[in-house]
Length: 299
Image 1 (cartoon, one colour):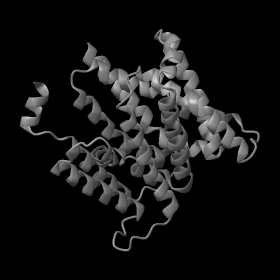
Image 2 (cartoon, rainbow, N blue to C red):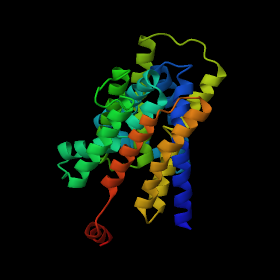
Image 3 (tube, helix red, strand yellow):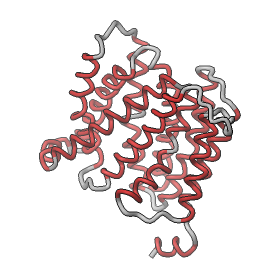
C-alpha cells in the first residue's frame, strides 16, 4: 500500500512540476520577475505554514530558526531569493522551451560542485554524464549551431545556467540541515521575504494587476515552490525503491515541452529535443550503478 501511495505522490509532483514552465511564462505577462518572486513567495509561505500547522510542527519554527539563524538566512538568500529571481529573469528573456531544459542540468552541476565543496569523488561515469549534459546545454542554447557557438540571448542563457549553480549550492548547504524539511523550506521563504519585498519597492511601484495574473502567480507559488515539494518528500519517505520514484522526474521536461507547445504555442525546435535527450541521457548515466554498487547499497 505504501508503494502505491509513494507512486501516486511522485506522479502528482512530477505532473505539477511539468506545468510550471507554462505557468512561469503566463505569470510573467503580468508581473516583473521580482514582483513574481514576492507574490509567489507569500503564497508558498502561507501554504507551507498551513502544512506545518496540520502536521503539528509549526510550534517548532522559532526554535528551529534560533538554533542556526545565520545559516537559515544564508539558505533563504540563495533559495528562494537569488535562485528564483535569476530563474524568472531567464524565463523572461528566453523561450520557456529553452530555459526549462537548461535549468534541468542542475543535477550535473551539483556533481561538480559536490566534488569541490564536499570532497566527493567524481567517477568516470560522472565525467561522461557532465560531457553529455553540457553538450545538450550547448545544443539548446545555440539552436543546434554548435560549431558557430552563436547565442540568440547570451544573457538569458547565462542566467539559466547561473540558476543551476544557485540550486546546486542550496542543496550542498542543505546537506548540513538536520531540521524538518517542511520547516526548513518555510524558514527560507520567511527570511527572504523582507529582501524581495524591499527590492520590489526599490525597483518600482506595483501597478494594478488583473485577477488572471494573481491566479497564475498563486499557481506558481503553490505548485512550483510549495505543495509539490511536500508531495515529493512524502513519495521518497514512503517508497522502498528510491531510484524508481526519482526516475519519474525524467518524464517532466518532455511533458513540459508538450504543454508549452499546446497551451502557449511556443515553437519547439528540434535542437531543443536533441539537447534535452542528451541532458537526460547524462543524468541517467550519472544514476546508473554497477552490480557491485547495488550490492553494497543493499547491504
